[in-house]
Image (cartoon, rainbow, N blue to C red):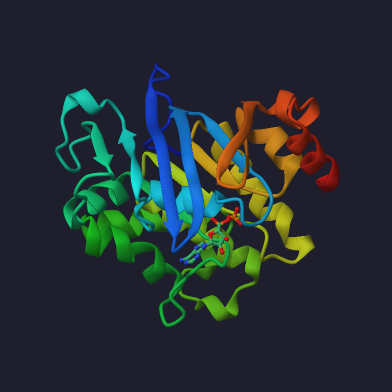
Length: 272
Ligand code: ADP
């Protein structure tokens, strides 16, 4: 794989990329998030683990504005630096107040999501899937965006699939396109929502391999995963959630090898 220049790679500091505070979200009477705090520093990989229904996906979607929390704040970068969209300055959204479309768009600008079911547009070629966001949303020049897409496709071994349609690809290939689509947006933060759980077991390795390489290159990411061995390999911090709260957090080696809390112990034991 050729070297890349991740736009969120370490730049000689490990300052905060993201801080979420006291996120709360209910669907009807179902209180799904009950006060979640997350901090992600530049170049850091955070793994979110926990039983099904514990709120992990809702946290991830909240960080990306796909879900709007009822309360709490999400801050990108240095909030004191201002809130100008796309300027690289800080951004804070306080969900207890009025959060409009512009604020959500600004939030979405900072991160890119890789979905469990890839979510590629079925009627578009691989290339079109990748360049759509950079062209239509970010209004970047077509020649630059196409060249970047081709370079990224080559680095995940899919240069020859540029003009294929998603249905012509394996699940593992589709997910690698999903990852390229996220990278092409040059986000500050990559969000992975169980990126391998829809894949046949023999295809999991190729996708985890790509994610591991991105982690090694210094991309900042939050990964929801059930792959504990993988989390132990790539994550700097592991956050164990249950029932909409963070039960335990810490370095991957501690939380996954020597959990303190009984609920974490049970969960880790079941998945090993
Ligand atoms: P996890 O990712 O840990 O499996 P989720 O965040 O997907 O958990 O879901 C947490 C809870 O929120 C579940 O009870 C789920 O049914 C509920 N939930 C998630 N999204 C919605 C939604 N759009 N409408 C209603 N309930 C939802």
